[in-house]
Amino acid sequence: MTLWQNEFFNRSVGPVYELESPLGGGLPATEVRVDRRDGAILTGRRPVRTGYALTDGSVPLAGRVLAWDRTKGMFLYRTDSPLRETQLVDGLYPDTWSGRHVTFTRFRCRGGRVSALVETDAHLLRRAQVVSSGGVRVRLAPGASRRITAPLRPGPGARCTARFTVAPTKVPGKGDFRRLGVHFLSFRYSR
Image (cartoon, rainbow, N blue to C red; front, side, top):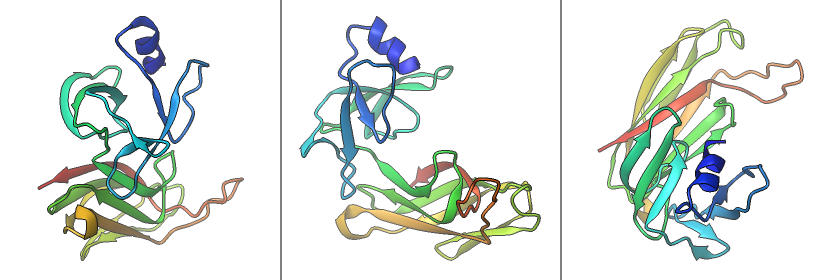
């Protein structure tokens, strides 16, 4: 809703890009995808070129945040052209549940750390779960939340990757047949 209000009432906003899922609302939008090699945002095979971008907090863009609407969760960026994401997370469902593995990738990375805020669900498992990555292990009691900080080392293509493993996992049943681990609530990169 916030996006459409900005597009409809602000003539300087446009075009609108859809990343992964349709935005709905019937207003025009261009479908884009992320190049998994370097984080570039592409329309077809061409990179999107723009000097500014308005986005919610779910899309970490390369550039400088010029303004932030805390209430609406919207960010105005002065972007590095072509438009690109700084990081990707694989292995999460849209409701923040993980499976057994979650992978965090940082682009144009020379090393550092990633800190993930994780939370267990006492309704899924009544015993402790362990989240591990890069030799670091965190044990969480049912219903607990903690941060796990994993090292990031540069790899091919100037990408740094941390692979998190969750044990045990469980299929909750009652119509949900996914094998679930823990909730990954946020990721924070630091050098």
